[in-house]
Every structure is written in structure tokens, then in C-alpha cells.
Image (spheres, one colour):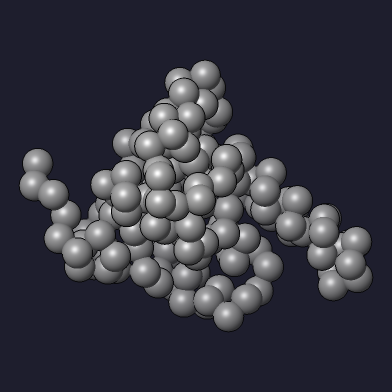
Length: 160
């Protein structure tokens, strides 16, 4: 298989081409808590097949929702509605759900030890390892470090 070109490594996936896309927590959160990129992201993902999320991403998104609730940015009722919607979507079959297992942890540890110039964080390494475990061809992230680490690991990263 040929190495991706720079455009493929950082460019968008064409609407007519299906790809196995791992959605990390930074992107998944934008589907449930409105932010600047939320509408564009929703339009990009609508009707697309081959989408993957992880249990880790679900927990991270709900952690961010809980923080916003504690800080008074979200009403408790809305936080619970977001949780319900996220879990319902996760259970609906719209996404393949990836799980952490020892092999994913070992891959994440290899990534952590392989990056000398990038301060890769544990959760970022786990997301990239999860993408590999699901045989994702692309990663969808809004996190700069995750993006850089995914490209370094040879993954295609989607810009939305």
C-alpha cells in the first residue's frame, strides 16, 4: 500500500468515498455540545458509513459535559439529555464501538515511547491505538497533539 500524500494525510475525505473513520473525544463532543465546528462536522458525518467511536471517547465527552455542568455552563437537565442522546446514538449502531483491552494499551505504550519530539499524552495515545485496533483508515480529531501524533504514526487525519 502506498504511503498517503501530504494532502491525504491532512485533507478531507471526499463525500463519495467511504472510509473507516475513528472519531476521538474532541470531535465526538462537538456533536453533542454546540461549538464553532459543530454544524460543519455534523454535515460531514451525516449518512457516512464506517464511523467508529470508543468507550473511552464516550467517557471523555461525558466528563467534559460534567465539568460544564459544575461550572454552570450547562443546566443539569441538559447535561442528562446530552448523556442520553450520546448513549442512544452509541447503542443505535450508527458507530462501531471500540473497547480498551490489553493489546490497545500495549500499542498506546509503544506510541508513547516512540515519540521523542511530541509530548504525547496518555489519552491521545490510547485514541490512536484504538483507531489502529478498529483498522481505521482516518482519524477525526480537533486536538492538535492527537493530530500530530496520528500523522506521525502514519494515519490519515481529516480536516473538517
